[in-house]
Image 1 (cartoon, helix red, strand yellow):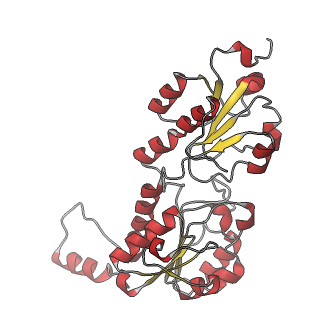
Image 2: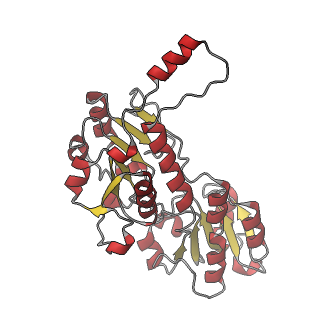
Image 3: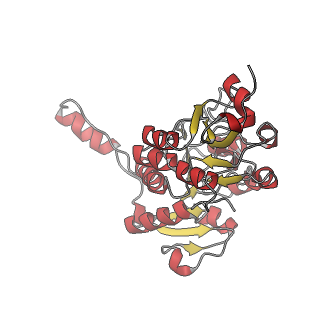
Length: 322
């Protein structure tokens, strides 16, 4: 079978490697030839020379090796927020535009972080059967929150779109909020959060929530030194990227500090394996990357196809990577 090229299609060929909403897929199909295939699929390799657009989510790696197979590629659309699975330098060197949906899941992730705060700080017990008076009294005796949120300091590492909103909601609940960010954030945009040094953020926070991206320089950013500076009863929440934490150091710290806790929605790798050192720890709580999993957020992310078509048709996209 001959290898297809761009002249074999009446409209540009767009390959979708992971799930998009039906509505966004249909919209794209009205403007492009659409192929659903992973990068290791024979159909992808057969069509590689004709692919002009690539739409990915979290788990497709777009690197120089993949780009070398796609001589006619014009745009990579990341249906999501973080673009650390895409080699931006390699794309730029080849003249391939990268677009994403940076606002798509902010609300969903903020809601999720707040739910984790409630789950961790305010234990709850729901009854589905009647209980005796003695059992009732015992339950009320056992299920008691140690703190109220207005007694605690929440530390936010990374005051970007999500971090700002988390700070806003946390302040409304009653937390004192401090943050650290590599950028200078103007005071009106801090939502009441106070800037502190990285060392102070980890030393002073009762609860710390991570909102930094997975760029190479952030690999194991939260290292043994930072983790060991946390309070012995601190709570660490991560809904950003699994690679930003040294999991071995975190496991060691949790083992030595049974009153502490970690709630991790993201991992390195995903899915995690039986060798993950956190699995055996009762104060490590692992979730399967659920923060952005609302129908609304997933639909929002799927609409990266709008910017993909903008690039294909020679117009400026709304959310370019540069």
